[in-house]
Image (cartoon, rainbow over all chains, first blue to last red; front, side, top):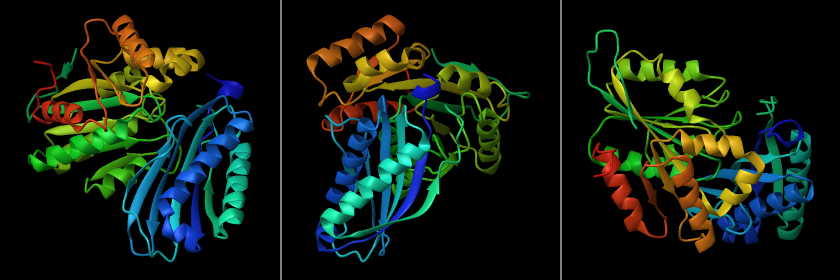
Amino acid sequence: VSGAHGIEPFAARLRAEPVREVLDAPQATVAVLLEEIARGALAAGAVLLGHLKCHVVDDSGRHFHANLTDLRSGPRVAGDSPTDARWLQVDLVVLVYGLRHEHVAQVVDESLAALGQRTGSCWTVEVRSNHHLATL
Amino acid sequence: MARSFACADNKGTRVQIYLICGFLGSGKTTLVLELGKRLAELGRPTCIIVNEVGEIGIDGKVLADGGLEVYELTAGCVCCQIGVDLVRTLEQVSSRYAPAVAIVEASGIAAPAGIIETLVYFRAVPFTTRCITLVDPIRLEMLLAVMEPLIESQIADADEIIITKVDAATAGELSLARATAARLAPARPVSEISVADPGTYASLIERLAAGKPEFA
């Protein structure tokens, strides 16, 4: 696998200022986010989902993680399930084959916007990383 | 087969290095987490080195959440780009506290042969390596279609194959995984595990944690 079918790692640190829907079910919300990104990446032309994964910490230091490798199996979530968080910090890594990192970033932005619109929550991208631009 | 390496003076406790390979999302971090926890319970000094694709790592955080001390290598792939960092890290850990076990979680795009070749340069203490490759049966057919050379090398160069997610795979997917392991890694042990069936996981973890990597 090389060239247009390569993988350009994309990562971001997100901060969510959630509203009640997100607060009540942060794990489910993050799972939906991973599914949205996966669908968006495939729709944008990704040839293969490598691995979508994230690590989430809330303002009390509670944490959980989630990952997705294929839409049939769906996302897997493990760890604490905070119910009274004021904010969530989400470290997100998206590894998909066949998309340039700027297209992955666009998919992530669109997924966050859609999620925010649906839940009324505010998702901010604090840091982006596409440091390793070499196609692997 | 597992490979044994000597060092200059061949002194020091022989370290068991478990090299955990397998494509992205095959279940490596879950295995490392459970194995690391069990080794800690048994009081066996263990070092965990995680190599991830990209600058920001998630697996290291997940393992640290599980109470494990983790060394992260995120500046490239250990099989082809930052093998020297792996050797340096092993040397530093060996001099700091003599681990009985080192678990190296390779990136999902790593070829085991490149890592094993790199480990030749680790000469601080004698060690034995055992490469364990995890195979996700659900995605195997697709992965072989899209990136056959990598997937085949991960299986062919392993000392042991573990088929994961057996609870979620179809009978056909499991058959393909078993047949692929038999074709590419003949006579190598193959086991099947599922997080949904803790018994399958427990027996594997106990065997590895007890320092008996070989099947009985």
